[in-house]
Image 1 (cartoon, rainbow, N blue to C red):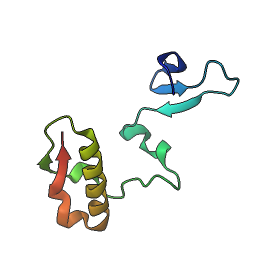
Image 2: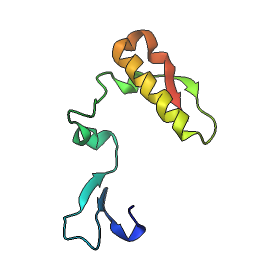
Image 3: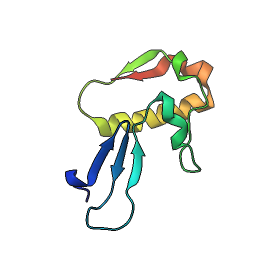
Length: 93
């Protein structure tokens, strides 16, 4: 587990490392539009659709981040398949 003493914040990056280990810390970037491409690799699929053209169609109310994350993944898959036919199903909240 990572403790609060093992997380170092520098500008928009987090450095996570073990204070009792000689291994260099791992840089973790805050995810935003400007650095989205930093997350691109063979395991991360970036949106190929224009997210600015999404309109709100689903409002998520509550603290259920588990459900919201899974619903967002389903919607992302849907947008990749047929963006024009489904762009009104953007998730808010």
